[in-house]
Image (cartoon, rainbow, N blue to C red; front, side, top):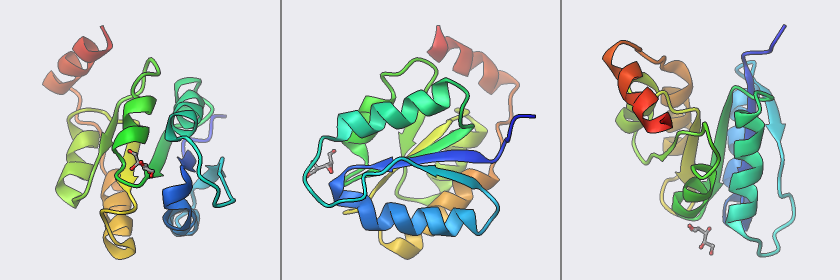
Length: 146
Ligand code: RB5
């Protein structure tokens, strides 16, 4: 049976600490966390890490993904290049809830230089606890995919 609570995490060097804090936070909620790094602080390239995480979601290996870089923007752009990925950067809880409810986002991106750890955890919770509403929103998501 597919584990519907399997989630991939990835970041660049700018967000290692926040990524590891997110991993701990969501593992405590019963998520099977696949943290694909990196673990060392050398400067790296966010497109590599966004793509790697996105491919885990697109392939069905993970149901959701959370990716992080300094702003959350670059790694989000890279992830959205992978077919089937709908990833949004969120710095507030309302947006994090809405990208699940209306856009059926399967990945969340966070900016470690934008949000503090406490807010980041609330954003993560808002994202993970929301569900896609379907209906007219499904028509629009289908249009994105097309
Ligand atoms: C790295 O310095 C920084 O450019 C990266 O983490 C991210 O903010 C890019 O969008």
